Length: 265
Image (cartoon, rainbow, N blue to C red; front, side):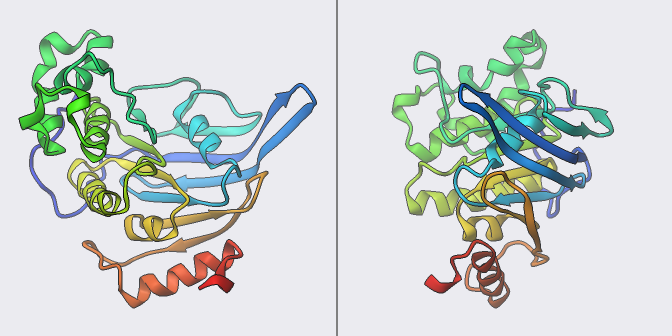
């Protein structure tokens, strides 16, 4: 297993995994009958690409991420990672949720080490915990406990816990949703920086139009439930990006129009 890289790169490497979602539909079997949440979704993410999924709340975006993570199988269709069918969770595909879910009785270092410990690799791979903490800028807080951290720092620990597994795909399910606005803006830049350094492929679910456009190379806009792909917006602006860039303003207008919100801007 390759260690988390220390060197800073100016662009994403091609080390990230390829994700193929083909004709996927999904439903939940509820007491009062089936509830369809995804309808014939086909989506491909190239190795090292940053893709954001944008759509109304409850439309099925997070469900799609669960399928990609292998947490449950689709009702219809196929999903694959580097050509292999996704049938179960795997350390190469890591999910970072909105809540960091840190164990309060474990130090920052010990929280980050969980994945390696569970796989029996910690004894020989301890350096990867230090590498991951260094990558997110928390090496000086290795001995701190979660209650001593700010919200943004706690989310950095969650990111380090994901990166220590050296994933080829990082799945981000509203990871900044509970942060205050200033911390959220800072973390958006830091996440992009992490993506560029580590070279993983990234799938981000967010309800924040500006966040999606600021961070991702491609924004996939979904309809209401059951989620169907309405459009894909390509953002070819180089990094680092500036939020007032006219291209971002135009893309925001297009995204809001697709979501039926353009009349408010």
